[in-house]
Image 1 (cartoon, helix red, strand yellow):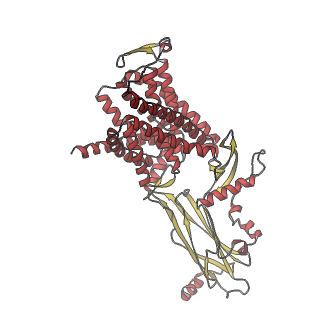
Image 2 (cartoon, chains in turn green, orange):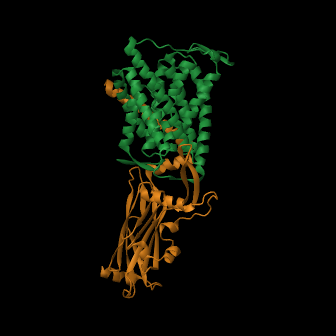
Image 3 (cartoon, each protein chain N blue to C red):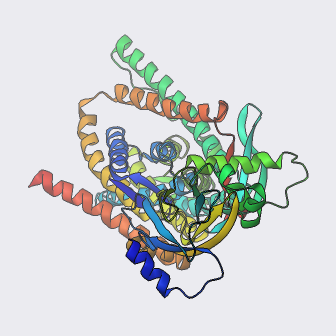
Length: 308
Length: 253
């Protein structure tokens, strides 16, 4: 069944969209990731304009994170104070990101920016995950699984000014690192249409030293507001949020996530991670090939002036 | 049919031209809805004349259907630092968003180049490009790329031999319009030609509009973007929450 998307102005098969939403949903349920970083490139592959894919994906992330945040709030596993500090950074970052996005859109280079960001981030993260999970599997085989050493030195963070007490996390640290983390995540949300959990969660654990139990809830809390803000910025400056597309992806995604969670329980963590790493590297490889190989059509059409 | 034509002839005030077009359209409006998959328009009509069919070359009919013109930025990729990026760009001042030319024979035989130029019939004549940056010498390759890309997407069509003409009087053709249409007034022009020269022409418009939900969402997103953005968030949250709540109920109940 073909469906005409009013903002993207293309006809797409509705079942393909539901299926894509479902597939990424299954993966995000299995691996406990948001899935934005897989969904946005997949939308490029089926012919959605990158600007629409990024803005719509931000909208979808708000919705798919919403029930998660509620659950964490009920369990009191959200550090609201830390979340707010991260959020302030996130809002600044999102505004910066949309500015850069719109500037490059006017130059006709926004596709390149988005694709380059994806190749770099997916490549780095995929490779790191792949190596790490390979090592974990090897260790598990060799010595029945030793706990990996964690929390390296974070001395320099304690030397920074503007200290603040975060009771829920049991931390007394400067606000500069969390604001910076927030800014980076905000920029990524605006340019790549991702929640940024894959950057924020490791940063919170290893850089800020937050307890693991509040990390996911707090990052979801930040993500929901930053992606919400990004959605509004894209909607008001680029007119690229396609609600029909978002709802179709969402419905597929929610159902997929429920299925994925059950599959995830049955598999070993290392196997899951290596699978995810392979998938991330595959998407990265496809995007990189598009940039590196000579395209069959060298010319492309666009609107002059880049809209805004 | 002969009686019908005869009646028509009676109704016609004495015209200036010897051969004129009486036109019919299968639809005068194309509505882009959520389920829009493109549209096929049948353009048909008859030639009315007050004298017997003239001797000499057979009557040819050329039908064009033209969407609203708008400026287009054509960009070309080049290999820089190992990756393919957009480098050169040429702005085409006006290019129709849709263009179909159907003719009763091969277009270059049905129409002389002079007549084509005068009436702006073939696709190349409809594209206007004036100022290009001085750094780019091969401007024409950008215009060619525009025509090539739009032809591949079914937006530009050259339909030689696709107009059927019966006894030099009745004609019909069908033009299929793809799903990715631009809104606006589409001009349908019909030319009658003999021996490469245009004898008479007739023009009418077909309205292509988004309707219903499509119209509403599109207008809202452009005129009230903040409201649209907030609404998108609310709908998405409600849908996501609703779907997960429904799934939970389904599993528990």
